[in-house]
Length: 141
Image (tube, rainbow, N blue to C red):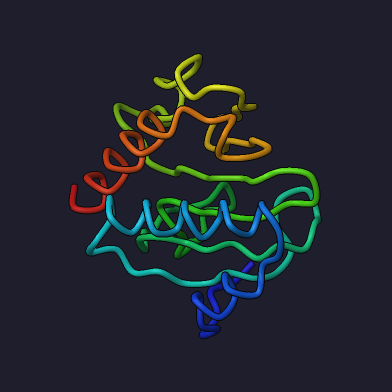
């Protein structure tokens, strides 16, 4: 998975249907909560071996399990075959922030740093955007 020079707005405008509309709405909301964050399109093979296109917000560096320094995004947004995925890589006191939002995000499946939901109607958007704002604050710390 790598950051590309592809235009994010062109990518988002090409997404079809209700899920495409939801991703464009989420993109606008994320950009309001992260106004100073760089936005890039990441493409390639993601965890689990699937090919992905992820809009990443905020550039961060971290050391992966192999000990390599990696550039990654703080918040990511992607369309999947059957759902929308968001990734929140913000950590506080050694734990992903997302764990603090269990049971607060609506009808969503949570991983340690990922959220999956079918549509914006299923999600508690105010709580999700609070999480995004807290992640944005971690970019400067």
